[in-house]
Length: 110
Image (cartoon, rainbow, N blue to C red; front, side, top):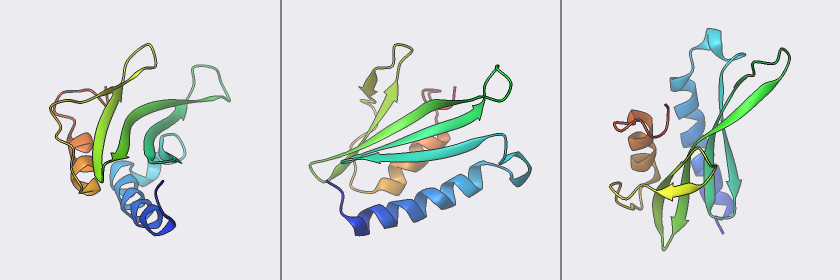
């Protein structure tokens, strides 16, 4: 389980990341959120639905802290998470987040 200090540190990193990703004028429409569950952190995109007045959350990537290393997962169309095997597990969360941000294979941001 991630301790409170580690979570706070991750929240600061993620808040900076989100500020860089979404232009100010779009922040009411498009949001990036994160959710902690145990040793798992999930990035989620929140956007308007096709149904007026409703929003939809689309999972982007999942980071799992296992054996003191961060592993990166992507979600398929059947809502199953898969390890991204060509992203080496790393103790540096920011490095893993940067790989997801760049998304060279188109697994995360479509």
